[in-house]
Image (cartoon, rainbow, N blue to C red):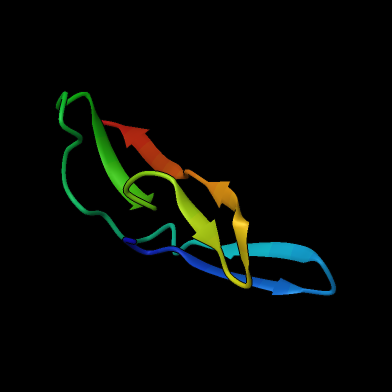
Length: 59
């Protein structure tokens, strides 16, 4: 994961992303990656639940 924090508290998933960070261009080169789970992953404490997250901005 890049720049993604997740936690589950009382069955509520909270996702934290620092919007000031950048990880360079996407594969297509059209956007700048801010955060990514880099594919689908299990959320903390809930292996049967998956998430896929990409946060990006236009160049």
